[in-house]
Image (cartoon, rainbow, N blue to C red; front, side, top):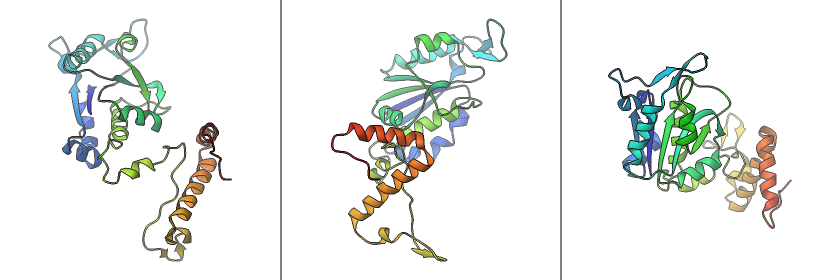
Length: 240
C-alpha cells in the first residue's frame, strides 16, 4: 500500500510516522507513506497556497491551483483508489471505514487547513471526505495521522499477532472485553477466575458476554448496531 499525504505543515507528521507499528510496517515494505509539502506546487515565488474568501467571511481559504497540481502530479505516476479530504463535515471515521480503506492499494489524503479548501476541489477532485469526530482541529494533519494509523495496523504482517487486530474494539460493533495480566492477585484485586481456568470455550464465552455488556452500558448507540447486525445473521442470537 502507498499513502500520499498533502499538507502545508509536513513536520506535524514526523512523529506519528516514525515510531511503533507505522515505522515497522514501512521497514517491512508493507506500506509507503509519503508526505508532500503543498507549497512546492504553488505557482508564485512566495509559494502562496491560500487567499481571501469570496463573499466576505473570516479566515483564509486554500487555493485550488496548487492542490490540483499536487493531485494531478501524483495521479500521473500511479492510479489512486481514493482521494480523501479531512473535513469536519465528512463522514465520521469508524472501524468499518478503516477496514475498507485497508484493502485499497493507493490513497491520497489532503489535509485541510485555515478556513478550508476551495469547494470546487471537493466537487471535482475529492472522492471521499472523512471526519474523525464532531469537533474542529487546527488542521487536518492529526486526522490524517489517525486515519493512516488505523489503516496500516490492519495490513497483514503489520502486527506480529494478526488476530489481535481482529479482536479490537468496534470490529463487530462491540467494545473489547476487559484485559488482565500478571499478577493474578494484586493487593486483593483479583483477575476473574474464568480467565485462569484454561478452558478456551468458557474464556471465549466470558469475553463475548463482557463485550456485549460493556457496549450496552457504555455505547448504547453502538449496541443498537450490534443488535441490528445480529438479527441479520441467520441462526445468530444474542446471549442476554
